[in-house]
Image (spheres, rainbow, N blue to C red):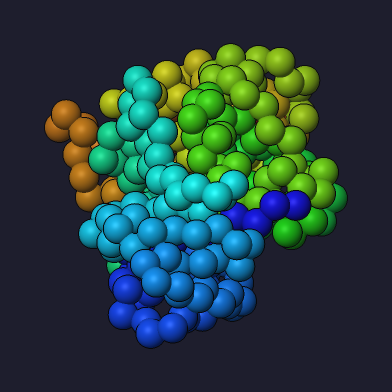
Amino acid sequence: MEEVYFLTAGDARRLLFARGGARLNLDLRKTGRSWLITIEGNDFIFPDGTRVERSVIERVARDEGSVYFVKNGGVYKAAIAGEHYYKLVPTVPPTIEINGIRMHRTKDINPLQDTLNKVNTVKPKEGETVLDTCMGLGYTSIEAAKRGAYVITVEKDKSVIELARINPWSRELFQGGKIQIIHGDAFEVVKRFNDGSFDVIIHDPPRFSLAGHLYSGEFYEELFRILKPGGRLFHYVGNPGKKYRRKDLQKGVMERLRKAGFVGVRRAEEALGVVARKPEKRTK
């Protein structure tokens, strides 16, 4: 497997100040491992022999909010420009930024703790089947799989899947066979599943303004249908203190979940969402 080395602005600055060489972590702090980078004249030499000019390292050092990687003898920004602009942001672990909007909470919390808060609301168990409706970088799916669950995850955006393939913290998504990735819109994908297919659903959609259909009563009815009796749901909504067009978005979500048949619907403050469950027997 070919080596890929990751660089942030901080890493680049450490190289620029080094004399003769430096040992750096080059996997975005995924491990505690370090690699030796040596210096010859104006070039920085990476462990696989790739030579990177000083001017390139200087450019990386100035780009505080991005991730770069060294692969196949070149240096690339972990970013994709298309209909939208996507890039990895060097939080630990990284998050994705789409048109300047971060996909994880990063203020006073890191994406890993954010993920744990969400997963801990429903506590997937060994042998259970989990649906992660909106994959992103896959941290939720990876955490559920670590707990022994089999996970099906859905991602609409090919660019997000591509960044997940680049991100070292997302590697477990594509290894080991406990996580199945479906490319598609969760609103349509859930219609393919049989009744009672899942023990747990973790629904972490984009903000309401970008994906209002994933907050709809129609979608919640499908989630109810595909959950097993007694199954658990976590629905990320966002900051409960914020209003969306003068409406309490979280309150509206809770009302629609109850209407779809869910019980035990309550706020999960630490995870900024709502938890609910499907009754063992649906009451008329």
